Image 1 (cartoon, rainbow, N blue to C red):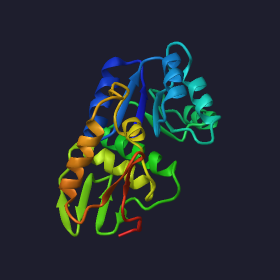
Image 2 (image 1 turned 135 degrees about the vertical axis):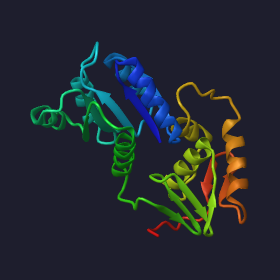
Image 3 (image 1 turned 120 degrees about the vertical axis):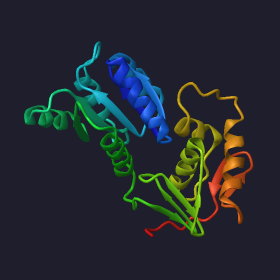
Image 4 (image 1 turned 90 degrees about the vertical axis):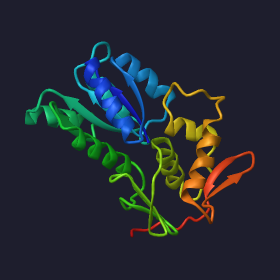
Length: 225
């Protein structure tokens, strides 16, 4: 999952960045509305955590721009204003969810994951693929009943592969969705992460390499546990 944080309070933005990265999310941070629009024009985000009162382009205008795209990211609006009228205004601008400051990080994480899931086709909270179960909310992976411990990046890559429903995911797409904007497009990080992920999940191998195209999960059976 890739998230854009748009927050002019630098310390708060960095705190949110750190917390979300611990949850295996790829996170970019900007501090003004103009920079937000630039990032949104070139990157495919799942969720935008958007402060309302921003320098440059106002957060309301950023929200309205995102709402114009039928396939754009979900918008979680953050603001110090908690009045009902402010919330209604945010929803009317196209925000998908609203969280008043101060907030608790566990609630922020839960809302972001819920928004990302809501923006896709209706799916159960826990993805099941053969004998593999993937729970992004509890950050748990199980294979044939055993718990599998993954690094944050391995967890993120597995989530992207499962979201593809058996489709092929290119290395470039994995870099875009599981790494932040500082990732080197010429790095071998994807190949190394896939290799380690295969090893941790164990045999029979679930992840297939499609020569010249990318990777996919071999079994496409997904259902609620």
